[in-house]
Image (tube, helix red, strand yellow):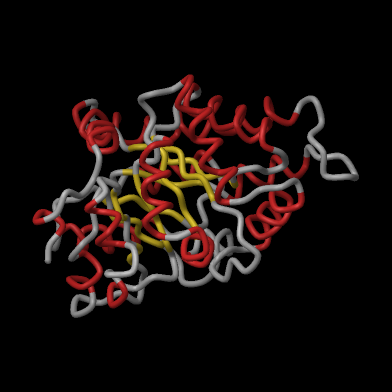
Amino acid sequence: MSASAIVGGTARLDARFAACKAEGRSAFVSFIMAGDPDQQTSLDIALGLAQGGADVIELGMPFTDPMADGPAIQAAGLRALATGGSLKSTLEMVRKFRASDTDTPIILMGYYNPIHYYGVDSFLKDAKASGVDGLIIVDLPPEEDSELCLPALEAGLSFIRLATPTTDDKRLPAVLANTSGFVYYVSIAGITGAAAPKADAVEQAVARIKRHTDLPVVVGFGIRTPEQAEAIASCADGAVVGSALIAVLEKNLDDQDRAKPELVDEVLALGRDLAEGVHRARASVK
């Protein structure tokens, strides 16, 4: 069953990528951990990132065993859990975000265990009601689409699949079969934040994926600076940055992991620089 045969995607997410395409630029996708270092600070960062140029917000769902995440995002998840972070509090954060911002798409990224514990039907109902636009669940392969992917599509949520450097042409159709919203290309093999991607290799990979789909291809993992973001955005429909933002957040915590007064401003300053780099890349190519 293809995504086109189901009610997949959301108007908000599709409209944002269409607007970026019309403006001749890539999308800047920012990742933060919901609830890190506390609920209010996390909400302030998310709203500020959207105001500062982030086209899509990815919110990490705090989890005790994030196997695909590097040290920075693992630590962020632990901080969020320590201050009461949960799937329920993540959805509440989205509801509060939507009270101020009804346009910026929000994607929840994480692992299936918390959703399974919450209950798939209840989660999808609450996620949709809170204003979530899509899901990236890194530990559910296409063979498990009946667990969450197909119900999510039927509920009107995009289900974004990951493609990696080891996803060959034989495997790619299975990965893309029920994907909607966009394709997330993991630019390096390994965990988040581990190394910087090489633009020429990314360009070849994106071109190969685009031979199989009309969906936007967004590239993440390893992008840390505005210059790297610009280079990757020049050959993709979007660039994702997470670990670098979290690293700045971590530098602005006190010895009890509480936010220092300058924390939000410091994170948002990098967010604006990254957005400018991403948007500049494709604008110059147009």
